[in-house]
Length: 271
Ligand SMILES: [Cu+2]
Image (cartoon, rainbow, N blue to C red):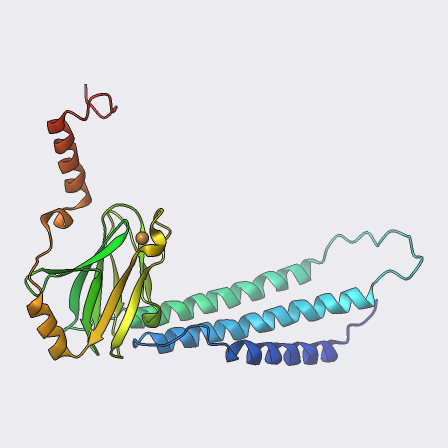
């Protein structure tokens, strides 16, 4: 049996892993950052990139070595050795990835847990998602309503309570990093502390129908004073329809259908 040149292979893995990590970390994968969650999330992704680079390097070095060392000699038409596997090796290459995946999962958990610690003075805002638009309710300010434009004060924790009105949608402001699904009938929230004033874009990140790509809204992060002034200017309140729970909305729809007689032949009619 040939002994593997372990030292050379380890060196090759280190060199390849370091070079790949350095190259990949030069790329600005995440764009501008504008929330307190951005730093820890970007670090988490950087760590994942470095770990993945070394895993990739290990695979490449092992594969490359095997390809060169054990390639068939010219003219060699004989069968390969009948190998049944190597239990020790299989245990090792199962346990190491499990440890790595659990480690990264634990790290991600800790990061998210920290981000989602709620402050006592957090502001609750309802984000109503429907095909294909976002509207926003401000329950702590007379339930004022804004369409297609979300305003939030800077440096204060915002809890966005997501209210899907029809199908799945997903709340995502890239500069805030956090992305959360809005699911009909489920209570989900996105917790963010914006730390940079400016205008951003809210993007629906869940394919939700034919107009999905147009499902965007403007996000304005401003000083507390400007935010309060903007709220005062808003005159409309959240329409009653949006305040219904999914069950209530279905019930209402049924009543309307019954009134208009449209339920006949629809298969919904009860015997
Ligand atoms: Cu959507």
